[in-house]
Amino acid sequence: MAIELDDASHRRKSRMERDAFVDSVFEQIGIPLVHIKAARSYDVRELHTTLCEALKLSSAKGLD
Image (cartoon, rainbow, N blue to C red; front, side, top):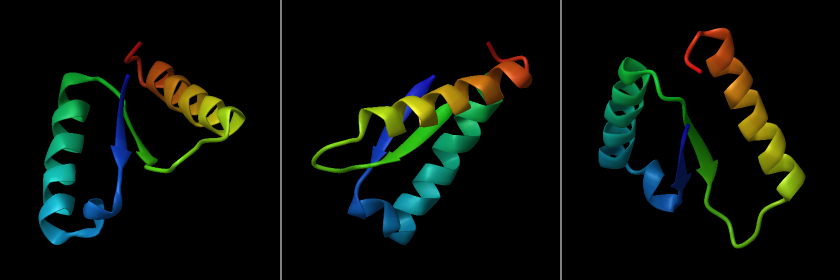
């Protein structure tokens, strides 16, 4: 699994195009990529849930 922190720059068109490319590369190589909105602090339980869900999805797809 890879995690990308998305800051405000990810709303720019050029960044969205880059993100789409990166997402497709990770999908092709079978590594789940999780986008997390950049923040000053995080709720650990929320992050845990998000990451566990991503791992479950990758396991269901046979990517583990």
